[in-house]
Image (cartoon, rainbow, N blue to C red):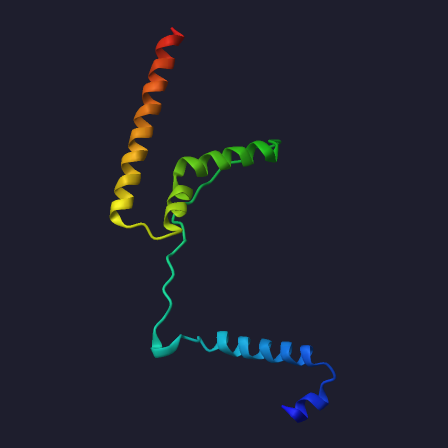
Length: 118
């Protein structure tokens, strides 16, 4: 390390270059952790293809608004939010029951509103 320091005038730039070289070599060789185990991360890839047709002369804001609405209706963002952390089966069942309760409540409220309209 001594001869290398004499060639380079500043230590931080030398360390930075060394770090970059090590990181690029590590990632280019497909580095795996010790004992040959690979890190398995949950997949965040979505198989949904949301498309919105934009009309001629339509403002981009309204097309973006329609796109956001379609993405929300697909429910994939909520699924990703739940998969962000591990959720065991008991927690999943509790969440599903709670969501069902909220859905039924919303339906009752909507039915009552529709009855009051006429």
